[in-house]
Structures are given as structure tokens and as C-alpha cells.
Amino acid sequence: MGSPHVSTAGVLALARQRAEENVALALRVRRFDSLGPRIQHVTRVLRWFEMAQLFVIFVALVEFPFLDTLTHCWLTSVGLWVLTILAVGSTAYCVRAWLREGEDFQEE
Image (cartoon, rainbow, N blue to C red):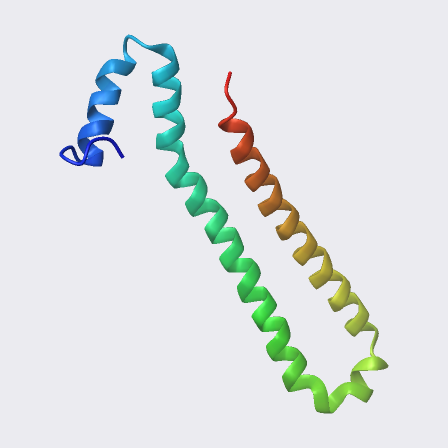
């Protein structure tokens, strides 16, 4: 970012100084500053989603010998519905966050 002789922190410091006079630059600096927390939040959601998926795979492997018993239990279908809703919900949330990132950087 910037000149090879100027660090990223130096470029950002200069941009913050000039942002006081330039509204468009101030908006871009604010957007840049908000990227880190947004990326961390979506990464946390994706991490929980992946952990849940791995847990479901683990349970499926462990419970495979008891398949006949599980097919006759009403809790199995309820559990599958709950996991499905959680998987779809977390995926939809991540896609929504991803699409909103694109909206933030459209030219005004």
C-alpha cells in the first residue's frame, strides 16, 4: 500500500490527517478501519459453523452401529431438523455479511 518507502501505518496516518479536509477520504478511512472487526466477526461465525459440522460428522460416525435404533426414535428427526436449520441460518448469515461488504465499497 502506498510507496515502497512508506509503511502502511505511515500511509494511514497521512490519510487520517488529510481526511479532516476531504469527506470522501474520511469515509474510505472509516470503511478501512471497520474491515478488521467485520472480518473477525464473520470468521468467528464460520468457525462455529465448521465446528458444528465436524461434530455432526463425528456423531454420525459414532452412531452408525446404532442406526436401527436411531431410525425408530423421534428425537432423531427433531435433532436433524434443528441441525439443518442452524446450518442454513449460519450459512445465510455469512452470505449476507459477504454481500454487505460489497455494498460498502460501491462508488458513490
